[in-house]
Every structure is written in C-alpha cells, then in structure tokens.
Image (cartoon, rainbow, N blue to C red; front, side, top):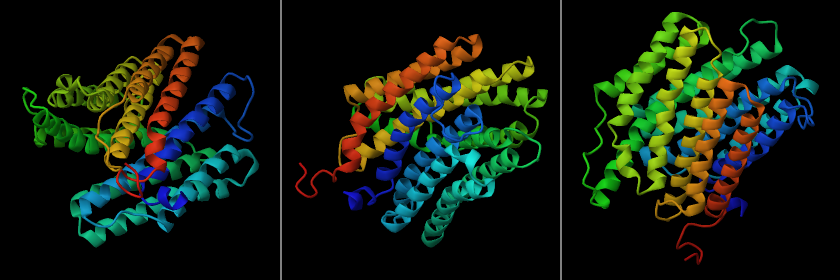
Length: 388
C-alpha cells in the first residue's frame, strides 16, 4: 500500500492535509479555550494555529497539487517514490517540532520546518527546468516567497527581531496570489469544458486577458504592503481595489450556471471568498478595526474551500473516476462554507459559541471529505490490479 500511496503526489499530500485538518482543529480548540492543552510544547496556541494552518495544512495541499499538475504541464513522469517520501517526512517532522517548539532549539525547529518547502522548491525547479517549462516559473517565485515568509516567521518568533506576525501575514497574501494564478487557469477552463460536455446554454467563461493580469498584479503588490504597512490607508485602499477586481473577475466565469455540479460550483464559491476577504480587511484597515474577519474569509473561506474542491477533483480524475460530486462530498462543501461563515461572524461578534460552531462544522466537513476521498487515495486507479 505504501508503494501505491507514494506513486503520485496527490495521494500522500491530500491524505496528510485531510488528516491534519481534523487533528489540528481539536488541538486548536482545546488549547484556545483552555479546556486541556493538547499541545505539549507550543509557546502560544494562537501563533501555532496561524502558522500550522498556512504552512502545515495549506503547505501539504500545495505539494499535492503542484506535483500532480506539473506532470501534465511538462509532460514528464509524475514525481513518485523517494522524492515524495522525503518531502512527506520533512512535512511531518515540521508538524512535530512545531508542537514541541518550547522544548527544542529554535534553530532545530526552524531547520526541520523549513526543509519541506526547500525540497518542494528544489524538486519543482528541477522538473520545470528539465522540461523547459518557463511559463510556470512564476510558481517557483511564489513558493520561494512562501519559504521566505516561513523563515521570517521563525526569525521573529524565536529571536529578538521585531515584526510579530510578519511571516504569517506575508504567507496569507502569497497563498491568495497562488490561488489567483492557478484558479484563474482551472476554474474557467473546467467550467467551459463542462458547459460544452453538458450542452449548457450559457455564455462561455472569458479567456485570460489583460484584466486577469491586472488583478494578479494588484494582488502581488499587496504582499509587501500587507507585510510591512498593514495598517496604512494606502494598503486599505488597494485592498478595496483588489476586492473589486477579483469580484469582477469571478463574475466573468459564469459560476451561477454551474449549480448542477457541486464539484464545479464549489470552485467558484471558494474563489468568491477572495473579494469578500479583501473587502472586509480593507474596510477594517480604513476604520482602524480588527481584521480577523477578513483574514478568516481568506483562510477558512478561500484557502480551505479551494483545498477541498481541488483535491477532491484531482483525486477523482487521477484515479479514473468521473469528476462529479457525491452526497457526502457535497455535504463537506456545504459544511466548510458554513464553518467559514460562522468564523467570520465570530470575528465580528466575539461570541465563543460561534467559534465552537465553526470548529465543529470544520471537523465534520473534513471527516466527510476523508470518507469520500480516502478510498480514492489508497486504492489503485480504476482498471488497474483488478479494480473495476
């Protein structure tokens, strides 16, 4: 079974992402509310939670998606075997040392935690270079920025350097940039193909053009602004501009006409959280209010929904199944959307019950996700080894 699991990147990394999503929410809620701290050595539950959602959960999903997609983009054989085992072990060790950070050398924690993204960057660079695939070199830049953000997190967390939360702020915007780039490719393409296949009478989603590049460019500019001057009015104004651009962009993809297929509709829903998050953060910055609501719109809403949607679709497609949702998987999509809504509302109202509710919806959503996707990740492709 291990050989099968490490035969393609989507198998180990989407499995790790789903399992970690369930475990981490229990660790976070019990520690945050002081019921019983299951984090044996975490210095600060909030800091741990912020880091692990971005570099743990999202980090695993990024590895699974990129090394599954890069084989299609380059025409090279999929990454498998020893490189996947090495990356998975580095990711796992990062999670262990982060939970034990109070008992370990900060430099050991940083080294083991950073090793995963370093390996991702090196393997990705090798694949793109050998294939001469310059078009996707932008992914190297994005992963490189994410690696620097993680390094910045460790420097500010374990040394006397100023700049608390620099790393997680930068990582948040970097991941949203990655969703903007990848989502702008796959969402309209999948929608366009589905319209044709099902003979849906609808305007076709627009092809990428200068407007899309302007939207991505605006998001890119937000990374240094959100990193260094998050409370400045210029940052607030640009956040509102980005919210408008992303809202117009997603409206051009005809998402409402995909309602018959939840596996496709959820991609549009996930992307819609980006303009919502930018709007909430922009207004909060200009009014000098807490930005937690907007941050959770981007993280629980956009990032987590896109992880669940893209990984489910990839698992179905790359195991020979029809990319179509099941009742359990659709339930997972609904539940994670409810979790995002409750978490955003909790940030605005400070009601502990809403945080509990958001956490419960999150946990059940990922349990449904694992129920639907786990068999795909640990079984051979349809038609192989007697699988029918």
